[in-house]
Image (cartoon, protein in one colour):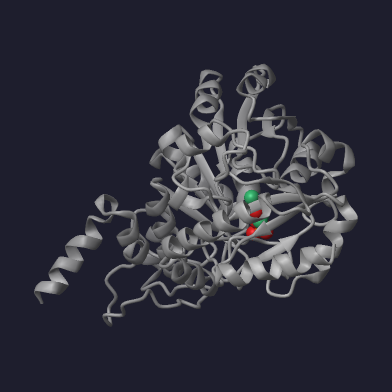
Length: 404
Ligand SMILES: *Cc1c(COP(=O)(O)O)cnc(C)c1O
Protein backbone atom coordinates (compact mmCIF):
# COMPACT_ATOMS: atom_id res chain seq x y z
CA UNK A 1 0.00 0.00 0.00
CA UNK A 2 2.73 2.40 1.02
CA UNK A 3 4.69 1.45 -2.04
CA UNK A 4 1.65 1.95 -4.24
CA UNK A 5 1.18 5.40 -2.78
CA UNK A 6 4.78 6.30 -3.35
CA UNK A 7 4.56 5.14 -6.95
CA UNK A 8 1.37 7.12 -7.50
CA UNK A 9 3.02 10.25 -6.15
CA UNK A 10 6.05 9.58 -8.26
CA UNK A 11 4.10 9.24 -11.47
CA UNK A 12 2.19 12.43 -10.69
CA UNK A 13 5.43 14.31 -10.26
CA UNK A 14 7.02 12.67 -13.24
CA UNK A 15 8.18 15.97 -14.73
CA UNK A 16 10.42 16.52 -11.71
CA UNK A 17 11.92 13.05 -11.78
CA UNK A 18 15.27 12.07 -13.29
CA UNK A 19 15.37 10.90 -16.90
CA UNK A 20 15.79 7.18 -16.21
CA UNK A 21 12.75 7.18 -13.92
CA UNK A 22 10.74 9.15 -16.46
CA UNK A 23 11.69 6.69 -19.19
CA UNK A 24 10.17 3.81 -17.24
CA UNK A 25 7.05 5.53 -15.88
CA UNK A 26 6.11 8.53 -18.05
CA UNK A 27 2.78 8.26 -19.83
CA UNK A 28 1.54 5.26 -17.85
CA UNK A 29 -1.60 6.07 -15.94
CA UNK A 30 -3.79 4.33 -13.40
CA UNK A 31 -5.61 1.47 -15.13
CA UNK A 32 -9.05 0.15 -14.10
CA UNK A 33 -7.63 -3.38 -13.74
CA UNK A 34 -4.33 -2.28 -12.26
CA UNK A 35 -2.34 -3.07 -15.40
CA UNK A 36 1.29 -2.02 -15.01
CA UNK A 37 1.61 -1.33 -18.73
CA UNK A 38 -0.88 0.74 -20.76
CA UNK A 39 -3.09 -1.77 -22.59
CA UNK A 40 -3.46 -1.74 -26.37
CA UNK A 41 -6.80 -0.08 -27.12
CA UNK A 42 -7.07 -1.62 -30.56
CA UNK A 43 -10.30 0.13 -31.46
CA UNK A 44 -11.12 2.62 -34.18
CA UNK A 45 -13.99 4.24 -32.33
CA UNK A 46 -15.45 4.78 -28.84
CA UNK A 47 -19.09 4.37 -27.80
CA UNK A 48 -21.01 7.39 -26.51
CA UNK A 49 -23.32 6.99 -23.52
CA UNK A 50 -25.99 9.09 -25.25
CA UNK A 51 -26.44 11.56 -28.07
CA UNK A 52 -25.92 14.31 -25.52
CA UNK A 53 -22.63 12.70 -24.41
CA UNK A 54 -21.40 12.42 -28.01
CA UNK A 55 -22.31 16.03 -28.68
CA UNK A 56 -20.51 17.31 -25.58
CA UNK A 57 -17.39 15.31 -26.48
CA UNK A 58 -17.41 16.85 -29.95
CA UNK A 59 -17.96 20.35 -28.63
CA UNK A 60 -15.13 19.90 -26.14
CA UNK A 61 -17.39 20.49 -23.15
CA UNK A 62 -16.50 17.03 -21.89
CA UNK A 63 -13.14 15.22 -22.00
CA UNK A 64 -13.06 11.79 -23.60
CA UNK A 65 -12.30 9.58 -26.54
CA UNK A 66 -14.26 9.79 -29.79
CA UNK A 67 -12.31 8.23 -32.66
CA UNK A 68 -8.75 6.90 -32.82
CA UNK A 69 -7.51 9.35 -35.49
CA UNK A 70 -8.37 12.09 -33.02
CA UNK A 71 -7.30 10.51 -29.75
CA UNK A 72 -6.60 7.00 -28.40
CA UNK A 73 -5.46 6.01 -24.88
CA UNK A 74 -2.51 3.83 -26.02
CA UNK A 75 -1.31 6.45 -28.48
CA UNK A 76 -1.73 9.20 -25.90
CA UNK A 77 0.27 7.28 -23.28
CA UNK A 78 3.21 7.05 -25.68
CA UNK A 79 2.82 10.70 -26.72
CA UNK A 80 2.83 11.83 -23.10
CA UNK A 81 5.92 9.75 -22.41
CA UNK A 82 7.87 11.33 -25.27
CA UNK A 83 6.65 14.83 -24.29
CA UNK A 84 7.99 14.26 -20.76
CA UNK A 85 11.30 12.82 -21.98
CA UNK A 86 11.90 15.75 -24.36
CA UNK A 87 10.72 18.27 -21.77
CA UNK A 88 8.01 19.63 -24.09
CA UNK A 89 4.36 20.42 -23.33
CA UNK A 90 2.67 17.91 -25.63
CA UNK A 91 3.47 15.44 -28.39
CA UNK A 92 1.69 14.17 -31.50
CA UNK A 93 2.27 10.61 -32.66
CA UNK A 94 2.56 10.26 -36.43
CA UNK A 95 2.65 7.33 -38.83
CA UNK A 96 6.32 7.90 -39.71
CA UNK A 97 9.13 10.37 -39.14
CA UNK A 98 8.27 11.94 -42.49
CA UNK A 99 4.62 12.27 -41.45
CA UNK A 100 5.90 14.14 -38.38
CA UNK A 101 8.09 16.45 -40.50
CA UNK A 102 5.16 17.08 -42.86
CA UNK A 103 2.78 17.75 -39.96
CA UNK A 104 5.19 20.27 -38.45
CA UNK A 105 5.62 22.07 -41.80
CA UNK A 106 1.87 22.07 -42.43
CA UNK A 107 1.12 23.50 -39.00
CA UNK A 108 3.72 26.28 -39.29
CA UNK A 109 3.72 27.24 -42.99
CA UNK A 110 1.42 28.64 -45.64
CA UNK A 111 1.83 29.71 -49.25
CA UNK A 112 4.31 32.58 -49.58
CA UNK A 113 6.38 31.55 -46.55
CA UNK A 114 10.08 30.80 -46.57
CA UNK A 115 12.09 28.08 -44.83
CA UNK A 116 15.78 27.98 -43.94
CA UNK A 117 16.91 24.35 -43.76
CA UNK A 118 20.18 22.55 -43.03
CA UNK A 119 21.69 21.54 -46.37
CA UNK A 120 22.73 18.12 -45.08
CA UNK A 121 19.43 16.73 -43.79
CA UNK A 122 17.67 13.42 -44.04
CA UNK A 123 17.18 13.03 -47.84
CA UNK A 124 13.36 12.83 -47.93
CA UNK A 125 13.10 15.98 -45.75
CA UNK A 126 14.94 18.01 -48.38
CA UNK A 127 12.90 16.33 -51.13
CA UNK A 128 9.63 17.15 -49.30
CA UNK A 129 10.62 20.82 -49.18
CA UNK A 130 11.72 20.85 -52.83
CA UNK A 131 8.63 19.07 -54.17
CA UNK A 132 5.42 19.00 -52.08
CA UNK A 133 6.05 22.14 -50.02
CA UNK A 134 7.42 23.96 -53.08
CA UNK A 135 4.25 23.01 -54.95
CA UNK A 136 2.22 24.64 -52.17
CA UNK A 137 4.15 27.90 -52.58
CA UNK A 138 6.74 27.48 -49.81
CA UNK A 139 10.32 28.37 -50.78
CA UNK A 140 13.38 26.93 -49.04
CA UNK A 141 16.98 28.09 -48.77
CA UNK A 142 19.34 25.24 -47.88
CA UNK A 143 22.39 26.41 -45.94
CA UNK A 144 25.22 24.94 -43.94
CA UNK A 145 23.60 25.55 -40.53
CA UNK A 146 26.89 24.80 -38.77
CA UNK A 147 27.82 28.25 -40.11
CA UNK A 148 25.66 30.51 -37.92
CA UNK A 149 26.39 33.56 -40.09
CA UNK A 150 25.11 31.69 -43.15
CA UNK A 151 21.83 31.10 -41.29
CA UNK A 152 21.58 34.80 -40.44
CA UNK A 153 22.20 35.76 -44.08
CA UNK A 154 19.61 33.28 -45.38
CA UNK A 155 16.81 34.74 -43.24
CA UNK A 156 14.15 36.72 -45.11
CA UNK A 157 11.19 38.80 -43.98
CA UNK A 158 8.88 35.90 -44.75
CA UNK A 159 11.02 33.17 -43.09
CA UNK A 160 8.66 31.28 -40.79
CA UNK A 161 10.64 28.10 -40.08
CA UNK A 162 14.29 27.33 -39.50
CA UNK A 163 14.69 23.56 -39.74
CA UNK A 164 17.86 22.08 -38.32
CA UNK A 165 19.15 18.56 -38.05
CA UNK A 166 22.12 18.29 -35.74
CA UNK A 167 24.30 16.34 -35.97
CA UNK A 168 23.46 16.34 -39.68
CA UNK A 169 22.69 13.16 -41.56
CA UNK A 170 25.03 11.68 -42.70
CA UNK A 171 27.95 14.10 -42.35
CA UNK A 172 27.53 14.53 -38.55
CA UNK A 173 28.18 18.26 -38.78
CA UNK A 174 26.93 20.07 -35.67
CA UNK A 175 24.86 23.27 -35.62
CA UNK A 176 24.76 25.68 -32.69
CA UNK A 177 21.11 25.45 -31.64
CA UNK A 178 21.16 28.26 -29.06
CA UNK A 179 22.65 30.72 -31.56
CA UNK A 180 20.25 29.66 -34.33
CA UNK A 181 17.23 29.92 -31.99
CA UNK A 182 18.16 33.54 -31.33
CA UNK A 183 18.39 34.30 -35.05
CA UNK A 184 15.09 32.56 -35.80
CA UNK A 185 13.21 34.27 -32.98
CA UNK A 186 14.54 37.72 -33.88
CA UNK A 187 12.77 37.20 -37.21
CA UNK A 188 9.59 35.77 -35.66
CA UNK A 189 10.35 32.33 -37.09
CA UNK A 190 10.07 28.98 -35.29
CA UNK A 191 13.09 26.74 -34.80
CA UNK A 192 12.23 23.13 -35.63
CA UNK A 193 14.85 20.52 -34.77
CA UNK A 194 14.98 16.95 -36.04
CA UNK A 195 16.36 15.28 -32.90
CA UNK A 196 16.33 11.75 -34.33
CA UNK A 197 20.10 11.27 -34.29
CA UNK A 198 20.77 12.10 -30.65
CA UNK A 199 17.41 11.76 -28.94
CA UNK A 200 16.53 13.24 -25.55
CA UNK A 201 19.20 11.28 -23.66
CA UNK A 202 22.09 13.17 -25.26
CA UNK A 203 20.59 16.34 -26.72
CA UNK A 204 17.94 18.63 -25.18
CA UNK A 205 16.85 21.05 -27.95
CA UNK A 206 14.08 22.72 -25.92
CA UNK A 207 16.65 23.82 -23.34
CA UNK A 208 18.51 25.56 -26.18
CA UNK A 209 15.54 27.59 -27.44
CA UNK A 210 13.96 25.16 -29.92
CA UNK A 211 10.19 25.53 -30.44
CA UNK A 212 9.29 22.22 -32.05
CA UNK A 213 11.09 18.87 -32.08
CA UNK A 214 10.43 16.14 -34.63
CA UNK A 215 11.58 12.54 -34.38
CA UNK A 216 11.53 9.42 -36.39
CA UNK A 217 10.32 6.99 -33.71
CA UNK A 218 11.51 4.31 -36.12
CA UNK A 219 15.04 4.95 -34.88
CA UNK A 220 16.36 5.05 -31.31
CA UNK A 221 13.13 5.89 -29.46
CA UNK A 222 11.58 2.58 -30.49
CA UNK A 223 14.99 1.10 -31.04
CA UNK A 224 14.09 -2.42 -32.11
CA UNK A 225 13.64 -2.09 -35.89
CA UNK A 226 10.03 -3.28 -35.75
CA UNK A 227 8.05 -0.03 -36.03
CA UNK A 228 7.80 2.88 -38.47
CA UNK A 229 6.58 5.94 -36.61
CA UNK A 230 7.24 9.60 -35.92
CA UNK A 231 6.40 12.29 -33.41
CA UNK A 232 6.12 16.06 -33.17
CA UNK A 233 6.80 17.58 -29.74
CA UNK A 234 5.76 21.15 -29.03
CA UNK A 235 7.37 23.20 -26.31
CA UNK A 236 4.37 25.39 -25.52
CA UNK A 237 0.92 24.24 -24.54
CA UNK A 238 -0.67 27.17 -26.45
CA UNK A 239 0.58 25.95 -29.83
CA UNK A 240 -0.64 22.40 -29.24
CA UNK A 241 -4.34 22.68 -30.32
CA UNK A 242 -3.35 24.03 -33.74
CA UNK A 243 -0.85 21.20 -34.27
CA UNK A 244 -3.44 18.63 -33.15
CA UNK A 245 -6.03 20.04 -35.57
CA UNK A 246 -3.50 19.97 -38.38
CA UNK A 247 -2.57 16.34 -37.73
CA UNK A 248 -6.23 15.40 -37.40
CA UNK A 249 -6.90 16.94 -40.83
CA UNK A 250 -3.84 15.51 -42.56
CA UNK A 251 -4.52 12.17 -40.88
CA UNK A 252 -0.97 10.81 -40.66
CA UNK A 253 -1.40 9.33 -37.19
CA UNK A 254 0.36 6.37 -35.57
CA UNK A 255 -1.79 3.37 -34.58
CA UNK A 256 -2.28 1.90 -31.08
CA UNK A 257 -0.16 -1.22 -31.58
CA UNK A 258 2.86 0.66 -32.88
CA UNK A 259 2.43 3.20 -30.07
CA UNK A 260 2.51 0.34 -27.57
CA UNK A 261 5.76 -0.99 -29.06
CA UNK A 262 7.37 2.47 -29.03
CA UNK A 263 6.30 3.05 -25.42
CA UNK A 264 7.88 -0.28 -24.51
CA UNK A 265 11.08 0.69 -26.34
CA UNK A 266 11.28 4.01 -24.48
CA UNK A 267 11.75 2.25 -21.16
CA UNK A 268 15.23 1.07 -22.14
CA UNK A 269 16.13 4.13 -24.23
CA UNK A 270 18.74 5.42 -21.85
CA UNK A 271 20.42 2.01 -21.37
CA UNK A 272 20.48 1.34 -25.09
CA UNK A 273 21.77 4.67 -26.34
CA UNK A 274 24.45 5.02 -23.66
CA UNK A 275 25.76 1.53 -24.35
CA UNK A 276 25.68 2.09 -28.12
CA UNK A 277 27.53 5.42 -27.74
CA UNK A 278 30.24 3.79 -25.62
CA UNK A 279 30.72 1.14 -28.28
CA UNK A 280 30.60 3.71 -31.09
CA UNK A 281 33.41 5.63 -29.40
CA UNK A 282 35.59 2.50 -29.43
CA UNK A 283 34.67 1.66 -33.03
CA UNK A 284 35.40 5.25 -34.17
CA UNK A 285 38.80 5.25 -32.45
CA UNK A 286 39.60 1.90 -34.01
CA UNK A 287 38.58 3.00 -37.51
CA UNK A 288 40.48 6.28 -37.24
CA UNK A 289 43.81 4.48 -36.75
CA UNK A 290 43.07 1.78 -39.36
CA UNK A 291 45.39 1.81 -42.40
CA UNK A 292 42.56 1.33 -44.92
CA UNK A 293 40.51 4.29 -43.65
CA UNK A 294 40.92 7.80 -45.13
CA UNK A 295 38.88 9.73 -42.53
CA UNK A 296 36.37 9.21 -39.75
CA UNK A 297 33.72 11.71 -38.63
CA UNK A 298 32.33 11.12 -35.14
CA UNK A 299 31.31 13.76 -32.56
CA UNK A 300 33.30 11.94 -29.83
CA UNK A 301 36.63 12.20 -31.69
CA UNK A 302 38.78 15.31 -31.14
CA UNK A 303 39.29 15.30 -34.94
CA UNK A 304 35.62 16.27 -35.40
CA UNK A 305 35.62 19.89 -36.67
CA UNK A 306 33.11 20.92 -33.99
CA UNK A 307 34.30 18.70 -31.18
CA UNK A 308 34.04 21.53 -28.62
CA UNK A 309 30.55 22.64 -29.68
CA UNK A 310 29.44 19.01 -29.58
CA UNK A 311 30.72 18.64 -26.02
CA UNK A 312 28.90 21.82 -24.99
CA UNK A 313 25.63 21.04 -26.72
CA UNK A 314 25.33 17.27 -26.29
CA UNK A 315 25.87 15.08 -23.25
CA UNK A 316 27.24 12.20 -25.36
CA UNK A 317 28.57 11.53 -28.85
CA UNK A 318 25.76 9.28 -30.14
CA UNK A 319 26.09 6.06 -32.08
CA UNK A 320 26.43 7.25 -35.70
CA UNK A 321 29.79 7.18 -37.46
CA UNK A 322 30.62 8.39 -40.98
CA UNK A 323 33.85 7.36 -42.69
CA UNK A 324 35.49 6.87 -46.05
CA UNK A 325 37.95 4.24 -47.16
CA UNK A 326 41.23 5.20 -48.83
CA UNK A 327 40.02 3.17 -51.80
CA UNK A 328 36.94 5.42 -52.07
CA UNK A 329 33.58 4.24 -53.34
CA UNK A 330 34.74 0.87 -54.74
CA UNK A 331 36.52 -0.12 -51.54
CA UNK A 332 33.50 1.05 -49.53
CA UNK A 333 31.22 -1.19 -51.60
CA UNK A 334 33.50 -4.18 -51.03
CA UNK A 335 33.45 -3.48 -47.32
CA UNK A 336 29.66 -3.11 -47.11
CA UNK A 337 29.25 -6.35 -49.10
CA UNK A 338 31.64 -8.21 -46.77
CA UNK A 339 30.33 -7.47 -43.29
CA UNK A 340 28.34 -10.20 -41.54
CA UNK A 341 27.41 -8.97 -38.05
CA UNK A 342 26.80 -5.38 -39.21
CA UNK A 343 23.85 -5.58 -41.58
CA UNK A 344 23.65 -3.72 -44.88
CA UNK A 345 20.45 -1.78 -44.30
CA UNK A 346 19.21 1.79 -43.90
CA UNK A 347 17.76 3.07 -40.62
CA UNK A 348 19.69 3.67 -37.43
CA UNK A 349 19.61 3.89 -33.67
CA UNK A 350 18.43 0.31 -33.14
CA UNK A 351 19.87 -2.52 -31.10
CA UNK A 352 21.50 -3.98 -34.22
CA UNK A 353 24.49 -2.45 -36.03
CA UNK A 354 23.59 -1.25 -39.52
CA UNK A 355 25.85 -0.07 -42.33
CA UNK A 356 24.79 1.77 -45.49
CA UNK A 357 25.87 3.95 -48.41
CA UNK A 358 24.07 7.36 -48.34
CA UNK A 359 24.94 8.45 -51.93
CA UNK A 360 23.15 5.45 -53.47
CA UNK A 361 20.60 4.85 -50.69
CA UNK A 362 19.19 7.33 -48.12
CA UNK A 363 20.46 10.43 -49.95
CA UNK A 364 20.08 9.24 -53.58
CA UNK A 365 16.88 11.29 -54.06
CA UNK A 366 18.75 14.48 -53.10
CA UNK A 367 20.63 14.54 -56.41
CA UNK A 368 24.39 14.77 -56.94
CA UNK A 369 24.59 18.56 -56.97
CA UNK A 370 22.87 19.00 -53.61
CA UNK A 371 24.93 16.09 -52.17
CA UNK A 372 28.18 17.72 -53.26
CA UNK A 373 27.09 21.03 -51.75
CA UNK A 374 26.38 19.16 -48.49
CA UNK A 375 29.76 17.32 -48.61
CA UNK A 376 28.12 13.90 -48.89
CA UNK A 377 30.88 12.25 -50.89
CA UNK A 378 30.28 9.15 -53.02
CA UNK A 379 32.63 7.16 -50.81
CA UNK A 380 30.97 8.07 -47.48
CA UNK A 381 29.92 5.01 -45.48
CA UNK A 382 27.45 5.42 -42.58
CA UNK A 383 27.53 3.08 -39.63
CA UNK A 384 24.92 2.92 -36.86
CA UNK A 385 26.51 1.10 -33.94
CA UNK A 386 24.18 -1.25 -32.07
CA UNK A 387 24.44 -2.93 -28.69
CA UNK A 388 26.13 -6.17 -29.76
CA UNK A 389 29.48 -7.02 -28.15
CA UNK A 390 31.83 -4.24 -29.27
CA UNK A 391 34.82 -6.57 -29.82
CA UNK A 392 32.71 -8.59 -32.22
CA UNK A 393 31.54 -5.46 -34.07
CA UNK A 394 35.18 -4.39 -34.49
CA UNK A 395 36.23 -7.88 -35.59
CA UNK A 396 33.48 -7.87 -38.22
CA UNK A 397 34.60 -4.48 -39.59
CA UNK A 398 38.26 -5.55 -39.55
CA UNK A 399 37.50 -8.73 -41.45
CA UNK A 400 35.62 -6.76 -44.13
CA UNK A 401 38.37 -4.12 -44.34
CA UNK A 402 41.02 -6.81 -44.97
CA UNK A 403 39.23 -7.65 -48.22
CA UNK A 404 39.29 -4.03 -49.46
C1 LIG B 1 14.65 8.15 -40.57
C2 LIG B 1 14.70 9.60 -40.40
C3 LIG B 1 13.60 10.40 -40.73
C4 LIG B 1 12.33 9.85 -41.33
O1 LIG B 1 11.71 8.92 -40.52
P1 LIG B 1 10.76 7.74 -41.07
O2 LIG B 1 10.25 7.11 -39.85
O3 LIG B 1 11.60 6.85 -41.91
O4 LIG B 1 9.70 8.39 -41.90
C5 LIG B 1 13.71 11.77 -40.50
N1 LIG B 1 14.83 12.31 -40.00
C6 LIG B 1 15.90 11.57 -39.70
C7 LIG B 1 17.10 12.22 -39.13
C8 LIG B 1 15.88 10.19 -39.89
O5 LIG B 1 16.96 9.47 -39.58
